[in-house]
Length: 497
Image (cartoon, rainbow, N blue to C red; front, side, top):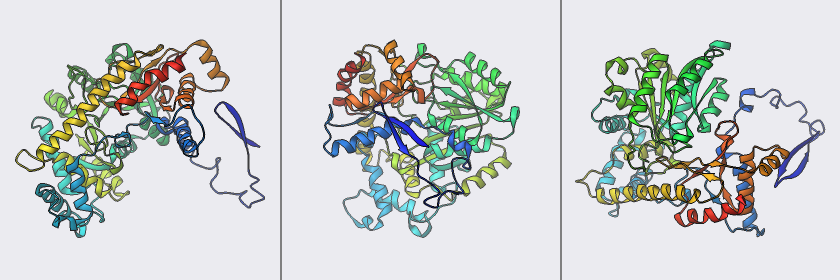
């Protein structure tokens, strides 16, 4: 039996090894015996397009001739990989924590040293190489609670409700594990937006939970419509037990920012339908469009009064990977839970204990993000200058991305109100759609692969995020350097023609 696949549209075959000849004919773990849920997991952000991009980069290094000299990775929100500069103060404190001998070095400002000493004193043996308690270092959780309280205008936050995590993704998957139960029609259903960030569909597939899709309104700048939520939950009750509603605000992959009125409507809907709310708010500092503002779900919930704030269960998530920091590799994040059953909370603490603790360097970085330099400290001016510069550049790129893409025939791009992505619609000719079908590919996958092979631009096809039938899209990050963004229209026009 042969294994077949395609590269550059050319059919290829790999002869399947003779397992009995090499003594591996009776593996305990094989495709028939492995967890079937894992086989259902898909993650488009690092899928076939990205794997081919990595191959092309190797080919370029080996001297293979291409009609381009580099791969432009517009597929993933990895800010530093795309040239964003680290914030000096964050790196100074982490460096001091990692190598405490630097505390004697006069090149480091005193406020950075004070932060580092405080973090180290809270670590076992005074070292970030030691484990922490499973929910995270206590002073870091306290600082997160103070940060949330300040952000939300004084609404109380308790550090006992804060769980530090390996990025926001870790906490999101943990919460989905807690929520998933039942069999058949009683199996947990989780409402996720379409288009969606593939973490959610992948986690639900692995957990064998039921995905309940609700569609964002592309014609209204990817807004969320309560009528669509009602349609989705009503249909889902026929075959599962809807228990949770996931919201990403600002949106990934669609870049929309929800209004306060929309958030209030979502909270009322969750209360009426008895749904656990999960608010993914990792892009909360990334708001660019005039008239748009970030509102945390927790703040709005409590301002709506006890009728809602005493009953709606909420978990909200944040990360060090986005916003002005872009520190993806440190894997720092947190989750705050509200109105969680005390006995379930004990189970949550048990569950996070299984993975011992989040990375300590990530916890240290998170602490500096939520406890930055203050106006009377020596690092304040530089910190504010760098923070503002990073956010201003992202705002400029958001506007430029929309303008550039809308000059390309066959592409329509909504305004990028926030986050780090856009999700433009592709109008593909029938010839291209038929060519894609002949290769067994989704039309937007066909487009993205052709774009990669001919221009070196790496995007992610919309089919990996979900979209309405008969529509085609791609996700693109706004992170490439401005000079590279300016070149995109010319390269995409070649493909469109």
